[in-house]
Structures are given as structure tokens and as C-alpha cells.
Image 1 (cartoon, one colour):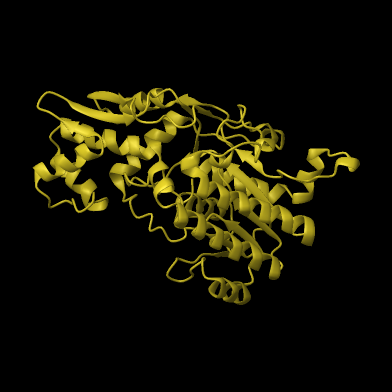
Image 2: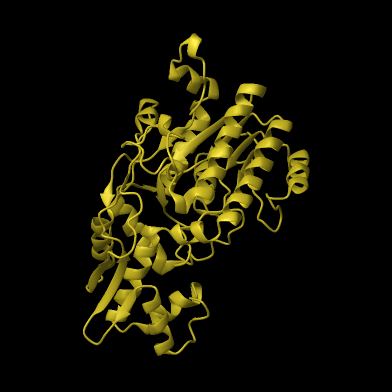
Length: 379
């Protein structure tokens, strides 16, 4: 990948795509192509074919996907399966037809088996049942990874797949219906602190950016309090309490999105698909090439309970945390083995507390709600 290469970033408005776009610009890449969903619907085969015919990109970062939290994944299973299959199938196939030199496809560690050994190695993919609530999304992503792998083996393409851990960062999704655990915790604590301080201006500004099912900046205070309580932010004259689902015992790993972008640029510059196959050291009589993706993570984990108290400290929320043990914990542990990536010479640089501090600052400064879901949001 050269600085003059014509590079298409699919999903440049989302958490990952925006970080990749910014990283490429910072490193001197200037021939960058982007499209919003209004300009290019990646689920539309003919639109994608016409785009590749007209633009002829040399490099593709496929960061476009439909994603969400546990509730969204389990509720909109057909949408997650269909839209992700269509986006990745169209982009990967047209990349092959138009002889793209290199493509990077984004998976997610949530597509590993629910009960696989820890830390999670690349070869654990497809060795056990998936987490049910995440099954549709996982199957779509596995299909995309296998599509890249299969095109490489049959057609000699150079498509690389990466498996990021849980992500957070600028342009994160703070919507309570679709967000992941960390941005949801940050927003809950922020609103809880505003209630403690009777800061209705801050609450009004937050709701202007991120309305809650018809509740916005002009709603009555009692309506706002009722809405916040539905999302686990409970205010009484004596105390504000934040509800957190589960026991708080599950362990999770979190990666700053700008570190992921740096890793993706690093891999696209320094790694070819043939290099990955060579690293696998497969004997000739057992030449079954599979699981050629690369994990991207920190290798460090934290319990949801400790994460909640860390966010509480950073935000400055002084109320109580209530762990609702009637709710499911989900997978109890999920941490990646990042030894392959480390052996290639890359390490993450952003500490979790530092990342949370930066995200809290951005939450109060700019509108992070406009994830305008244009083929975009990926974690």
C-alpha cells in the first residue's frame, strides 16, 4: 500500500471507518475515496458494481457493517444477517472482479464460540456453538471471512481479515437501545451525575443530541425522569442509582478505535495473505488452510464491575451502582490472544483509563450521536 494508492474506506462515518480515515490522512495517504449511504448503498449489487467500475480503487478497507448491542442483535436477527451478508458480498466480489490489489475485512471477536478456551486464539473459530443472542451477526461475519479466504485460495486475491476485540472511541454509539456496554455506562454515569447536580441544561443538551423514544430537550422533567428510569437511571431525593445488568463478574477486553486503525494500516502496509499462510507452518500432507485472520486487541481484561467503577470514577458520579443479577451475564470471559500481531511488531498504545477519559471529554463537547448508520457502525 503506497501513499499514492487509490484507497476506498467503506463505512467511513462509523467508529472504525472514521478512525481508519483519520489514520490514513495523518500518515500522508491522500488519494482516499469515501461514500455516504445516500451516495452508495452497499447492500445494492448494481450500485456497488457501478461504483467499482467508475472509481477502480486499488485498496479497500471494508469497515462497513450493521452492528449493535445484545438487545439489537437478538431482536433484529434477520436484518443483521441480511444486511451484513449483502454489504460484504457485494464489496468483496467486486473487489475481486475489478482486481483490487488488497482488501482488509473486519470481523469481531464476538463471533468466536461462546465457550472457547481463553485467551482466544485464531484457530478457535468454528470449534463450538455461538452465543445465541449474537448468532445471526456472527454467521454473517464468518461468511465474510471465509469468502475472503476462499477467494484468496481460488483466485489468488490478497484479502486480509482481522478480528478486533470490543471497541470504543470517537464517534461511538451512545444510544441505549443499540450501544455496547462501555459507551452505555459512560452515558448513564454522565446523566446520573447531571441529576445529582440538578444540571438540567446538561440533560437537555444530551437529549437534544440523543432523544429517548420521543423524549427530547423540551420534554417535562417528570417525563425525562420516567424515561431515564426505564434505562436504569433512577433518581430519588436522597440518591441517584445506576442499574447494570448481570453480576458484574464477566471479563471483557477493550481497544481504543484509533489503535485499531493504526493496526489495520500497519497490516495493510506490511502483511500479505501469503505471509499469513507461511506463518501457519502447515505440513504439505495436511494442507488445509483455514483461520487465516489476525486478532487485534490488548490482551488485557477487566470485569464489568471494575469497569463500571472505573467509569464512575472518571465521570465523577457519586451515586450507587445496582447490579441486577436477574439479568444474564452472557459469556463470562472473552480475551484475545494477540501473539501473532505482537510477533509482527505491533502493540496498542492507549490505556483503558486514558481512553475513557478522552471519550468522556468528547461526550460533553461534540455530538457523538450522529452515527448516521450509513453502512457504518462497527465494533
